[in-house]
Image (cartoon, rainbow, N blue to C red; front, side, top):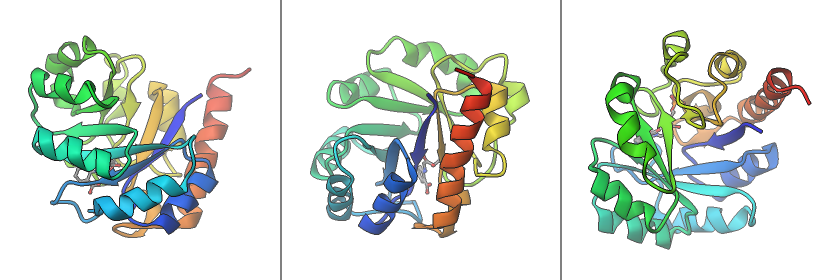
Length: 208
Ligand SMILES: O=C(O)c1ccccc1NCC(=O)[C@H](O)[C@H](O)COP(=O)(O)O
């Protein structure tokens, strides 16, 4: 089953919307540079509202270990997504507390894939150089190198996610900017269409 992560959740309302649409995971962005920045308090309310099954992923960009662990705990996250140039030791330390999605840009994949694959609890996510920028990756170029079990992000939406799945067969897909009416506010129709399109594409790619 291909998992679906809907990122950039900034309210209880949008958390419930994504969960009811069938999302497997919700992303909460704690990077101060983001237009989708959410407070730990709001993220905690949203996290507790969606029940035990939906994963809650705290998203961080070049932030200190203490800040990451404290924020993830305060916001009741179940996993952490790490962007930016980070050391193996730092990622190992976070992974001692939370499952980690380690974000890698396509240009860095050859050099970095081996660095992160050996750490227990760390899963690779391929994303565009500017996270949350809505720019798709070159799936055909990535096809020979896409690591089995990796997650895919970068400019995905209802109109293109089926093609991305066919090209790369990721373990999960993640999206934000093509599912919004404005930064930080979900478009309900786009969220539902995204989840439905993934479900249809996976049944066509992996027939029972
Ligand atoms: O989305 C942001 O504003 C953001 C800012 C800083 C770090 C990470 C951020 N987003 C992380 C995500 O997981 C996005 O869903 C991912 O980059 C895909 O975004 P998009 O291309 O807009 O679908």
